Image (cartoon, rainbow, N blue to C red; front, side, top):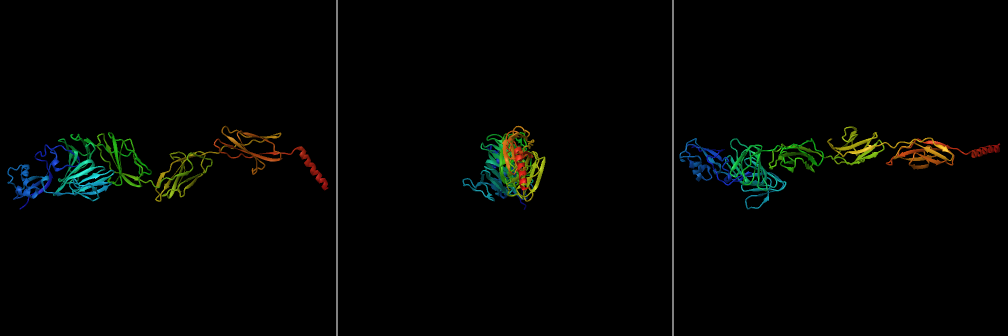
Length: 565
């Protein structure tokens, strides 16, 4: 004899069950069976009557308490509960069916989290792969996260500073019922879809009750016990103060304690990075985001994995501010953003954005030339400190700070020095970068500005003027700010300098040397910064003997010849 065939479906109650229950606010977790709001669809299963079946026999087969057969008769409006027909379909509330506990498993754990396995028990450290049963409560600390997955594939992700408990977790055949309670904090619930047989999932908060099937949504409770719900996929039903609303995909609502849910509103789109770079080469990492109309703030999360589970940083900031991370190791990261409106509802999450960071090898520290330095020679030596991970260096010298007019460019420098040859007299900009062994080039160093300036002009000496016992020497006046250096020597190479004076005018008067002979003079100019230019070409003058001395000299020679004769 065939037995009744049991199948699980979600049916709307034929009677308004649960009317008059105390209002409960929908939170991110499931609500208990006893708190199902009357306006929610009650989960029922179908039983197909086989030949020879009676209601009592069917109830003994499927009900946790077979004595509730009269309730089944009433639900199905059976005039004669003892008279059933083969092929007849009966509805059985899932809550009355036999079932067994359904456990959750900790699939991801970051930071500090604790579990209390039953009310009244103490807290212990939560571990990866721990199994959670009915009555368990999980709380996360700061910068912590937990993900729990049920046997059905349904799961929740619990954020920092969140307390969440499992009120019920049951399976009955292929039907699963999960009921959570979110005391405070934030969680994301992901309920898997199944064709016609979606699990029943409910979440209680201090201010609302939420029922969902085949959906993904966020629930949060703040310190004032205000509940916020945002639906990312599918839809959910929310009830509070004996009133319920349906929140569609891409909508959210807010529920204050003792109040009805607010009218659902459209969630804001996520902000996008203003100027995305292929590779971020320097720290701190700073990102600006485009403006989203209606957004009061942005939430930005950066994680090590595309699933945004292993979170490194989560920041909340104004739309006109920057997301900033002081230190990140070289690697690939994933960034996700949300906009938050003036009621605290978080908008849709962006798709994970890949952020590649490679700071190493770092820019070298320049030792020479000095910033704003001035150099008189057209060959300027450049040097920098060695970088650990650098295999080579890239040097650039340009005529502009933006390095559009580059005059020297070398990427094959294998030591820490470079000589910039044949530069013109003008200002230049210098920078250097490190190149790794795989030819990856790091960020440029700071830009150094230096100037190659010409030496002071060479004042050419006029021909010396000898008058009596004085010699006047003149050269062109180079103007204000210049002084002069004057030298006189008895040889053209100035190996022996007889006079070496610094003077502030374009000329000098000397006493005629006592010794006869040819003398040489030259001069150089010194500018206001103390730089001395080259010496002029030497000018010469001759000091001859007097007539008497010359006569003595002639007679002496004649006398010597007479004696010899």
